[in-house]
Amino acid sequence: MPSGRTHDRVTLWSLPLIAGGTLWTTARADLAFWVSGGFLFSGLIFGPDLDLYSFHYKRWGMLRWLWRPYQQAIKHRSIWSHGPIIGTIGRIFYLSLWLALVGLFYLGIARLAGAKTYTGQELVAILQHSIANNFPVYLALFCGLELGAMSHYVSDWLVSTFKRRFRNGQPNPKLSVASRQKKLPVKQAKKARVK
Image (cartoon, rainbow, N blue to C red; front, side):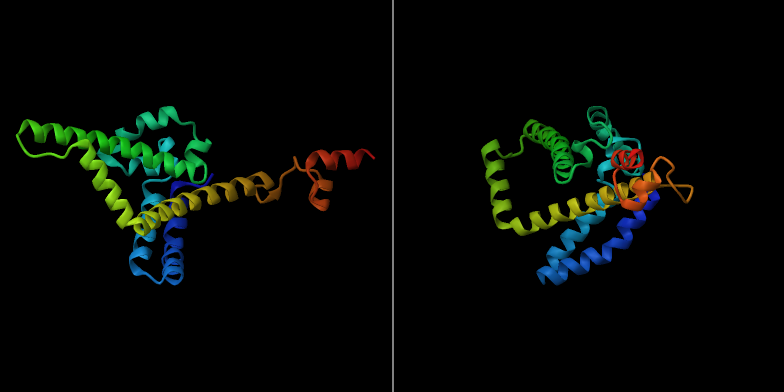
């Protein structure tokens, strides 16, 4: 598994490609901004490794305690944290729960102070209106968040595969000569040697 610094480098080196690719594909600077911002946020702060004590987790600073229940509920590298799309949706949902709690606390304080507050139906209507009017922006932000997470998954997979294949720069001795030469799985290679 790559170190946190390696994941950071992958994110920062990939950012110009993500921004340029989005701008070229959509021809809209605002969408390129949201995709790039989501990619950077996901790659540096909101990534899959929030399920353990990691660079992502440490960067939340005084708010890192928010992720303790998440870490206890989610096993590292499970589909719920490192799964494509579902991992990102899970982190968004989890953070949204905390934001909703803060919002409810704020509404309670505002009501106690006598300020006019929105009802639940009004808040839902505002949210629906915002999503309907800004759907491309929300989609761009989600794509950026998922691309940032994907850069993490792919680098994890590449490093794990490389480590499995090679140890200390040498081919893994657990892989037989026949499996390396013929590109056969180890079980098939053992059968080929027996014959």
